Structures are given as structure tokens and as C-alpha cells.
Image (cartoon, rainbow, N blue to C red; front, side, top):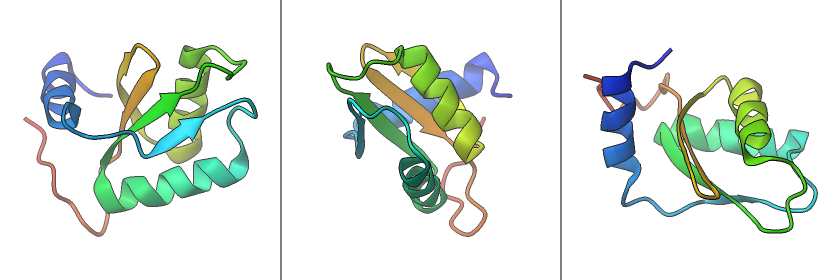
Length: 96
């Protein structure tokens, strides 16, 4: 689990990132989870935006993605989720 201090640190890092994935009407599917897991391995920190036509609640979407990819939810703000997962191969972020 991330501490409050670590979450603050990750939020500041994620601030300038653009969302790479979008969750739409279909919600979360297996293919999306796999792609996000791969992207997390490459980048460690990423934003995912939830579109207006997504039928699931953003908290549910965030939890499904986090559990599916083994990542931590650093933040849910508006319709944007920030996920963090420590990379095995390309570790770039050192948590405080």
C-alpha cells in the first residue's frame, strides 16, 4: 500500500502526464487490462481517462484496473485515474 506521502509524490509526478488510455462504453475488458499492465511496466505511472459514456462508476473502474494489473491507485480526480506500479525492468521512480 502507498502512504499519503508517496501518493502526493506520485500525484505531482503525474500532473504533467496525458491520459494514454480511455475507458468508454464497453467498460474494462481483458485486452485493456493487458495493455495497461504492459504500459505500466514501461512507464510505472500513467493516467487513464473515463469517458462520459462509460456505464460503470469511476471508483469501480479504478479498482478493476488496479486489481487486474496489480497496480496501486495513486489518485482519482474528476474522470481521470492515476495508476502506479513499480516496474521490474525499467525502474525510474524512487518513492520517498
